[in-house]
Image (tube, rainbow, N blue to C red):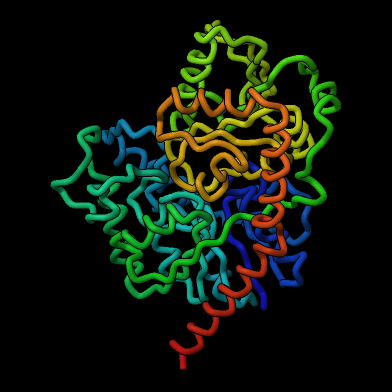
Length: 424
């Protein structure tokens, strides 16, 4: 079985890192796995960087981009999440169809495959979703409520009040519905929450949907390091309780909920609790002076897994206060390093955190409950040790590469079998 993973990247960002980990897990299990990416940050010889077919194609794409920018000039939205309208591709379809891969595993494919490109693929497709874009319009995350457009269809009468100008999300969704009508997808969702969104969507209501978590190398890389050693290595205080948060773009990503964590820490500080400090990775120290309720240590943007392992091991608790999230790598990585996790019980986080066994799941967006969870974990050393051991054990049992690879192989075999039956 030859599998080719299609991903915009292999190392920068949570989706790229997850895609590469799936590829690596499959290789370790003996699967002939390769990756095709637009940007590579690894030295893996089985990862190839896609190249545009010709100078003419690149020039045409540049002109097309300018035209798209012009047509979108009046579009506005108050949804701060990234939008991709699926009109740009890297000209790979002919090569993909002619290649020797038995099956394509799509991941985050922004500007690598357009909506039309995906429709023209003639090989079996397994699509691992790292966000909601596949079944939405252009949004990579959309509101999850009964009136969500992905559940009802993108109609003219249900456009969000915060959007104006051309309805690009509706146009993108309509293009997907029209172009993909004959395409057969097997969808892999890393979380039960996202899988349920897929099943309830108009676009993928008939698709085969499987839930498989993202893998993690819990034996060689992501494992506990002595707390004092980790703190010395990162120049962090040895005598404080350390609360860790990390995300791409640090505290500035509204979906990651850093403002909710700050509010929770303010609540902790108002109880005259002292001796704790905040550690943040994903962002350098802001140039603007801001008031925080406790001292803050800024680790900057971290791409080295060894440094991240030190950060998790140095912390007493990892807080993942996301407003919306699929299966965040940070929560899995922290638990693999034996660090209890506090999070809101939303999205895919209940698939990671077991309440009061490996961490604390707070009521959605209740910062008082979030603060309560942080204090509950920090208050008792014996309890912390039990939580740490269970977190590590749970991560090894559920996210080990062999465990995840076995599930992917089964999905691939089923997808190939279905394709053969359709072509018979």
